[in-house]
Length: 220
Image (cartoon, rainbow, N blue to C red; front, side):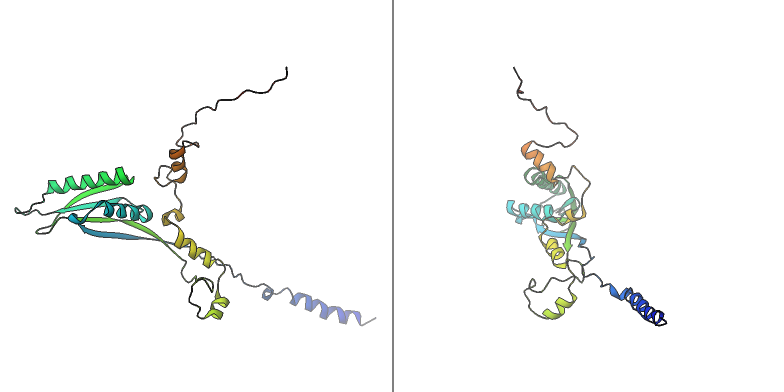
């Protein structure tokens, strides 16, 4: 009868040992987020090189990456022998801004002029651009990078979800959308676009027209 306490005590010790923190395995799911990076975009074009195709390319890039106003600056030669005056520069800027608004639906366009001595007229373009990048230190799974090197190391250290976030960062057309928007008047709001195209939905605080009802069945 004296053996029972001796057997119970080691069993209790074993049970408590199984409840230690080492029982839990750290998660392999990444908690890293896609990086949204803003930077200054600047470009210069000689005014005589500007074409409709060039303006379309500028508009396309701005619609995708722009996150501030589109600034267009026209230079002119202030010297007495200059053939392109400040008035000419302002007129050209107004013309380009009109094209951007009318043909490319970019409303947030700012124009200015810049004096440059003995220099051919130029167009200076600048705006804040937003780009999306994969989380730092978050590589893709083996087989998606097409390199085929150090596969074992990548499998061992791979964080689940990194490949998906990397692909989302690369494939998102307008990276600033990843940060969300609280502007219902945005030119790029999809619900607003659908309403404008098809006249459907409830938007801008304006109620839809009443729906005409049909005949209801009645018992005679």
